[in-house]
Image (cartoon, rainbow, N blue to C red; front, side, top):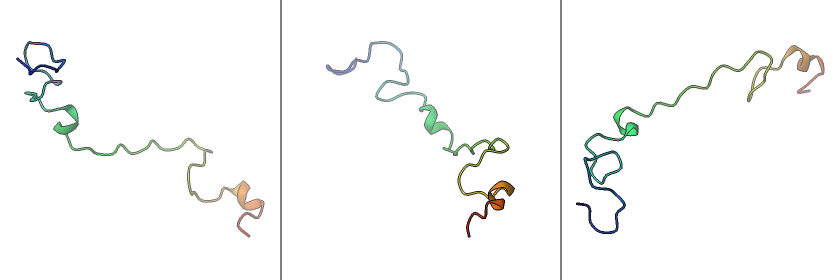
Amino acid sequence: PPPPGLQTPPGPPNAYDENPVVPPIGLQAPQVPIPPPPPAPGVATGPVAPTPAAAATGAGS
């Protein structure tokens, strides 16, 4: 049984025990960052090439 003070109920081991039989999901596979989805057309996200409308206003000069 778990030492006094822990809230782990008696029973088969699970992911919340001190020594889980199955490693946590985060440790089973490498943490590969998920690439952000492509921005919708017409939506400027971050540094992007100036749109024709922005270039017409003389932006950057």
